[in-house]
Image 1: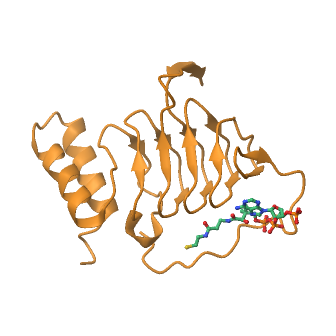
Image 2 (image 1 turned 120 degrees about the horizontal axis):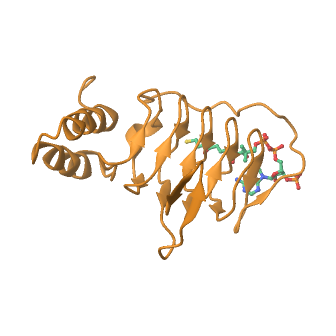
Image 3 (image 1 turned 135 degrees about the vertical axis):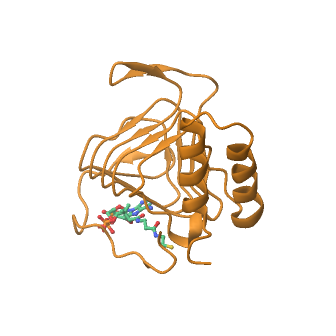
Amino acid sequence: MKFLNAKSLYITSRGLYLKRIPIIPRVLKFLNRVLFTCDIPFKADIDKSVKFPHNALGVVINDNVIIGKNTKVMQNVTLGGNMGKNKMIDGKITTAPIIGDNVLIGAGSQVLGPVKIGDNAKIGAGAIVLIDVPGGQVAAGVPAKILKSTRNGNTPSIDEENSQ
Ligand SMILES: CC(C)(COP(=O)(O)OP(=O)(O)OC[C@H]1O[C@@H](n2cnc3c(N)ncnc32)[C@H](O)[C@@H]1OP(=O)(O)O)[C@@H](O)C(=O)NCCC(=O)NCCS
């Protein structure tokens, strides 16, 4: 099963979509839904280095999401729209989160609407994020607030088992 996983199905579907191959990307997206219980659309622009520990279990991502390098998306994360709200981020109108590089998106968190999560930010497990999170900051809670201080500024160690 090393080569058949949620991320490889996404990457293959994305590649075929960018080459304008019809139908197969949709089939692969459907397979991902059935085999790995996740919804990772080929229209979303997710860097190949992004990690989905636990094989993206329960991860749901909007078509308009962009995710940068080396970001980790834990299980049961939603990166989605919020009632059609839109905003200009990085010179482009969008309705969904734009996530930077080296971000940790904690288990069960929901990042909703046109928000920007800066490089090296951390989103706490279970957070509902409705605001921009500047680079290097930690946001947690419902609704998420930027934490003023944390006991340690380092990325918590995460079980790498099943990471891809
Ligand atoms: C948000 C997070 C990155 C912060 O880690 P940290 O920098 O070590 O922060 P600390 O543990 O020092 O916590 C700082 C404060 O935030 C609070 N906090 C931490 N995580 C929180 C969360 N997810 N939700 C709400 N509050 C949280 C702590 O209680 C603490 O509050 P206090 O200062 O009033 O005591 C981490 O707690 C987290 O949620 N990681 C996600 C890990 C994950 O998804 N694991 C899944 C493995 S399968």
